[in-house]
Structures are given as structure tokens and as C-alpha cells.
Length: 284
Image (cartoon, rainbow, N blue to C red):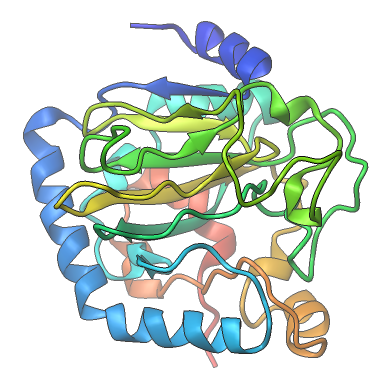
């Protein structure tokens, strides 16, 4: 098993790494079943939201991918693992103390989903109303993770990654860069692969894309992002003044998160509550 420092070095070099066995093998099946049920219950809502966003002319994800935003409001079955020592240790190596979670979404790539475009995550995605303007400084300000609730493989749509691209000061969400096609394959692309229970960690600057699921079963994951205390998350938080000003009033698109219900927060383990204190819904 790799040490925190070894994972940090690989992320510095390649932009990503995989931590195996974060969710134990005898637990991950129960987590998978719960997440699939929750996402299915809200699938119509997810599809309607995505259709409305596309109708406004905004570019989002890929068709055939179901999303449930802030799924921790629906179930806390995976919550004990969010403060995993290795994951938090890696985040603190980059950000220092007082790490926070900025989103917790369920993502189900159904068989036959389309390929997505090459991009970097918020706050680097230039299609978002709130974003850091390119060229970017060479520093990580946000850490993305994809929790594999099913095995990830080339066949079932393991995420496309471009190793080393996190060190570039731009990304293809801006459009074509030096002849690079944002919608096509890359000569150096790799796939995120791992066993269920593993977690892909990557610098949010890393160029990546949704891959087609060519299997006959869903590919299921959680998207969890970790942020330093000094990164302003309000532009992505529905109801916050910055979100209203930068997204609602401009009619723009953004990576959005909703607050956590007080009841859901109260059910979290104490060491996980510290990651979400900034996110709790305020009483009316």
C-alpha cells in the first residue's frame, strides 16, 4: 500500500493517482445498491435539469449520464469513508489544515452514454460563469476524486485522462488549443481503472473526459471534491450571494451544489461533519 507521500508525488508528476480499498470490499456492494436506488428515484429530475441547461445553449457533461447532486442529503451510507486518513492526508499535503468538501454527487454512466468533451473541473472550466481566468498559476486549488462503486475499466467507461496536463495554464473547455480537438481522442490519453471501492484522485486542472460505457451494465461513481479553507466556494453554492450575482443574474452555467440538510448533517460522523460545516442549510 502506497504512503501519502507517494500518492502526493504521483499527483505532482502525473496529475492523478488511485487509492485502492477506501471503501472495504464487504461494504461497497451495499453502497452501490443504495446509490443506484437514489439516483434512479431522481433520474427524471436530473434529465430535466440537464435538458434545460442545454436548451439555454450551455455545454454540459454527456448524454446518458445520470446525476444526483449532493447525494449525501439522501443517504449517508458512504459518509464514514469521506474522512479516510489517506485521502485527507493527501488533501492536507496540498492545502494545509481545515480541508473542506465542496461537492458530493452520484454519477451513473448508463450503457451507451456518449463521450464527453475534454475539460478541467471547477474553478478552471471556462464554460462556467465563475472560473479562474487562464492562464492559470501552477498551483492546485481544488482536488477532485471519483469513487468507484463498480469496477472501472476501458469497457465500461473508465474516465479518460491526459497525464501531466495539470501543469498547463489552459484547458480545452476554452475551445480548440493549438489544433487539439476538445471532442476527440488524444494520443496520450489514459483510462481510470480500478476495483470497486477505489478512489481516483486528481488535480482539478487535469484534462479529462467522460468515456463511453460499452458494457451492458451501469458504471457507478461518487464525485467528491476537496478544497482548502481559502477557496471561495460560494459561487457554486445555490442560494449564496455570489451564486446569485454570477450565475442566476447572468443566466450562466456553473457547477452547482445545494446546501446540506441539518438532519443529514447531524447524522454524519463527527470527523466528517468538520468537512461539511460550511455547507449546512440555514433556517429560513
